[in-house]
Length: 117
Image (cartoon, rainbow, N blue to C red; front, side, top):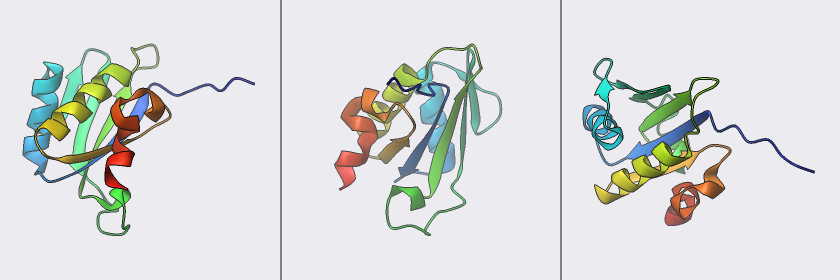
């Protein structure tokens, strides 16, 4: 039995920085320009840095204050490589970051969750 993974969307939950700095990190890491202060388009991919509406409601990463919502166009590239780069960049800056997506097993450190158990 095979499973179909959704490589076109991912959420990255982040703590340890502000929204503007996180959006700038996304732009620099992906070599892209921001559409506005918090949204970065890289080819057929969109990365929106926003406050997490569930911040503080959960005791784990789901309750962290910021999240990056990453999406690729329907026929766009997989998000595995850019999300991997974003996780590494966030960790390199000392931010906590965990990805929640169908392809976590293909990301560094399984998307980051093992770092925070």
